[in-house]
Structure formats: C-alpha cells, structure tokens
Image (cartoon, rainbow over all chains, first blue to last red; front, side):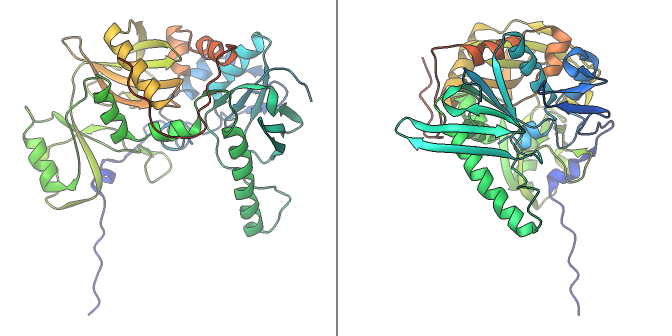
Length: 74
Length: 332
C-alpha cells in the first residue's frame, strides 16, 4: 500500500496574507542616474518628489524590497 | 581618482531612502561614492595590505574611492554580487561572484572608520529573541513572550492571558512564501491553535494596547513619531500608506535605555517600534537596524536625513567595529 504523505503547514504560514496593495520593487519609469547617484523620475530626483518617496520608502507594500530591511539586511 | 574625504555608501539602487542621504551629503559638498554590489556593473577592488590596513581603491562604473580617504560607510542593502556578466558559464560566474563578495565585502568591512551600521552588528541586532532579552537588560518594558514548537504549550500559555484576543502571533521573518505575501503580527484565539507541533518555532506575545510609536535613533539622537492607523490591528504596517504620523517627545527613561541598547550592540542607527500604553509606559516591540525612515521624515518633518548626514560627516570620531565580538556592558 502506498503511504500518502499529509501536507504539513507550519502554524505561522497559516497567518500569511496577500498584501492588499503592492508596489513593484522598482518605481515604474524611474531610472538610476549614475552621475547624480540617485534615482530620477521624469528627470527629477525622487528626493524632489515627496509623494513618490512616501510610497516607496515605507516598510510595507513592496515585497522583497521594503521587508528586506527586516529579512535581508546583511 | 579624487583623493579627498569620502563617504562610501553601499546599498541597492532601489533603496530610495538612501537617495535622501546622497542628496543631503551633496548639499554639504561631501564626496560620495555609492556602490550597488548586486548591480550588473561589477564593483571592482585594487587593494594592498599595509601595516595600516588596506590601501588602494574600490570602484563601480568609473567612480572610485580611495580606501584611505573613506571616513564613513553607510551600509544598508548590500546584496551579493552577481559575478562578472562576461562570464557565460553559470557555475563559473557563481564561483566568481562568491570570490567578489569575499573580497569586496571583506575589504570594506575591515575599514577602521565610522559605520552606520557595520553589517556584523546589524546581523547580531536582527535576531529578535536576542533583541528582547537585551531590551529587558537595558531596562525596557517588554511584552510577555513565549517561543515554542508546541501547540499545547502555546494554547496553555495563551489561555493564561487576561482576556481572549490578548495574545498575538509574530513571525521572526515577516516575508511570506509567495511574491506579494506577508505574515503580519496578528491576534490569535487559543482554541484555534493546533494541539500538536506547530512545525516551526513560533513566537507568541501579550498584546499591548495603546499608541504605536516609531523611534529612529541616529547616533545619540532619538526621533519619535506616533502612528495613528485608525484600526484595531496589532501591526500598523498594512495601514501605513494611509496612517497619520506626528512627532512626540522621547521620555528620558526611554532615551537612556535606547542609548544603552545601541551601545551594547555597537549600532549608530536603529528603527525601534514601541507601544505607549494608556498609562504612558512605552513597551519595546523590536528594533530594525536598517529600518526605513523616508515615510516618517516626509510626513513629520523630523530631520532624520540631516542627522544621518551629521553622523557621517562628523570628523574626529572614528568607530571601528569590524568584528562582532562581545557586546559592551550597558552604561549605568
């Protein structure tokens, strides 16, 4: 008789949620300006665009980027 | 190659928060070399060991820093190098990438300069059980906490809580298994816990009701902001795009404990999360040694970037912490 292996899920993963809103890791349309050493959007540095920075400098919503501050900082 | 005092920044190009620091340092006419080790454009080194340490240069895409001119390192998301893209064989490229990482990270990590933060210190500080134990030692109030593999133990411990809904589960690493998923801290019902193994070490804590506070510590300075997420969740992160933030003073006792905590871990930067309960007492939840701060600064006006720039530019005080080593005693 073939033994069927039951799926085992760690308790913590039962608490996993899908982010209601996610943002891509890279800001759409932004590019890194090697001369200025900052990213620009529409040729303006992000630092001149606080609304954009608000969204992309949070600790939530850009998977494998913001949470990297928790999980991947080396 | 320019030979004048230089701040070396090591982070991913997608670390947009660091753009604030680059801009501020530029405003102060400080020379900056920003490296992204994970970029396809390789970071290269040419370094010679001398009695005074490594001399030579480190460079990327035509921008170089003389190692003996580096006065401070701002180290954040230094992800591993991919290996020279000219190498077409994947295993050969992977081998080269490891060699690059050993050399580039190793040389930079050995620099006897001011660090914000040294990665060895960051690694030590990232360990949440260690954080909680150290927080208690330094005088912070900490929530009752249980870490266990046993569902029975968790249920028994949670049932001892004052009221249902007063216990939360919190993962050590909040990233989920799929893109776009996350494991936030969340309330649990003891009855919903499995009666057998939890199949992974699991952390449970007493829920502390009150006002979430984010305190960003930079050198000796602490900047606290209250977070109003207008919901009853125990984890404010899901609501942070719509939350409101306002500066609040850091109580003297908390400031003292923060200095002790930072000193013992050898950190110059840390983003701490607290809850201020109804009596006004602050409860330590965790520290993120490379935590984001841009959203706090843009919404509160707290001068976090300027404080980081002050730290990176301050002459005469070098802090060399290349090796993890032992933690210093808590100052009294």
